[in-house]
Each structure stands twice: as C-alpha cells, then as structure tokens.
Image: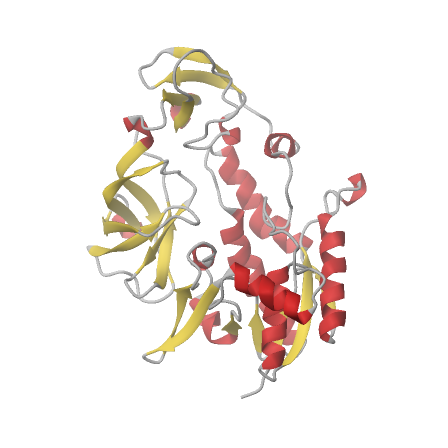
Length: 360
C-alpha cells in the first residue's frame, strides 16, 4: 500500500538514499529537516547551515518537498540538559540515544503527523518487521553500521509507523545507489561528534556549560600521578590526554572514583583493571515485554561492538528494575553512563539499560 511518508532528511547520504528508495516503491515522500542546535550561530559556527543546504539539494534532485523545523528548545530541555547533568555526575552519557527517544522519534513524529504523514522514515541502519502480530526492532544487516544500539529506548508504540529503508544495505551499497541516482552528497562524510552539535574539541565545548572540578590522579595501586582537569573530561579506557609520561607502556583510565573526585589509571593495554566480568545497571528500558530473569543472550556495551554473550539477573534495586550483567568473556572499558543493549539470537533488539558506576 502506498503511503505518505515523511523522511528525516539530514543532509547526509543515508537519509537521501532512504527517501529515494521510498520513492521507487511508489510512496508519496516529504522531507523534513531538523535544526536542533542554535548556541553557536552567534559565533559563526553553524554546521546545520551546511547540512540544510545539502538536504535542500537532495530534495530538489529527488523532486520532493522539503520542510525545515527548529527543535532547538525541546532538544536543550530534553536532551542537552540531561547530557550536562550526567557529565557533571562523572558519567559518560550517550546523547544520540536520548536524542532518538526524545526528538527524532517523538517530537519529529508528532510534527510529521501535522504534515499529514502516515509513516516516518530515517536513514538509520536498522530494521523493523512484524513478528507474531508485534512490531520488533532488528539490527541492521551491515554489522559495521548497525545503529539499533542507538534506538533501544524509543517508544515501542511508534515501531508500526517507522520505516528504515536502508536497513538491509551496507554503507558501500548506499553510496553506490547515491552515485547511480546522481545525488550530490554521494561522497559526503558520515556525521560524528555530539548529536546535532557536531564535531568539536570536547573539553573546551563542555567548559562553556560546566565548571571543571580538578582532582587527584592515582594509579590502581594508589600512587599519586598528578592532577586531572575534571572527571567529566575523561572516559573509561581513554589513553590520550592523561598527562602521564615516562618509560614503559601507555596509561589508560581505569576508573572515575566519584567519592573523592579521583581519576584512577592503569599502565598497559591489557591491565586487569581495564576488564570487568560483571556490572550493574539502572532499570531496563524495553521494546517489548521485559526480559524474564535470569536471561541468557547477547549484549553490546558500546556502538559497533560485536555481540557478547551475557547473563542478566535482577540486581541491586531490583524493585526499581536494576540489573546485574555477567559476561561470558570479561569486557574491556565497561563505562558508566553508556548503555548495555540486549539482543536475541535472531538479531531482535530487546531493549537495554544504562551502566551504573561500580559499587564503592
């Protein structure tokens, strides 16, 4: 059945090809460009201007209407404020996950419906399919580009109304299709950096919004190694920017000890303190029925990681939905604030939970 589908046209090649594929299927397609960040406009740094021009060129080439909308206020209130709060708490948050839930698959969808949309589509490398009368989210076919990790907290009620046209394609195939279509952004690089804010030096950017709280640096054996600029500037497993030199192997962040604002470092890529056999999380967020615990399956604790075997049990704060994860193989750089996302053997994304700091 042919439908009216509003596509989140970002200016990148993925969303442009997604729109083209929907047109080939005979759907009525409308593009919608989101501007979600304004703070840098006054400084002349405005990545959204270039993105919009690319989206406009793609829409003109595909002969589809393009609308532009400014979601900067809800983005600041519902995504960026939470991002800053988590950074201040010493966590390493993932704003892409929050942006998908709060903006792309909520505010965007409601706006698209106001344009008469029956469905919405994006250029994510993921898939949706109906299984036993339920709509489920599946990993994208390309394991190097699968983006279901970033989608695990969206409201499952929206899944029947979402399409991911490039979910069965590889990135290379998407670029091939773009070249064949004559799209000007066929070779445009993939976006990176903070969701909708763009690529920039992270520490100077964060200092604009949060006051750094310096503190001590210790080795895992308790030896003082200097001072850090603020825990919010570091992440577990980080090697660069620690300010620790000397002979021997490189140093890595092993822990961020919130109780005394201390950065804990370890020497050597394979140091045991960089690996964990288990971790605890906050409450699970599910795309279907909650996992029946204990549960054995697969998880990713970061984007682009291969699936890892895991056992999931009720954890501390079980009444609130907290979980305990036990990995079959110890995992490197288990990072509080990042998400553990769960999958079954068929590639269905079941949901996930935010990794909590290790108990003191």
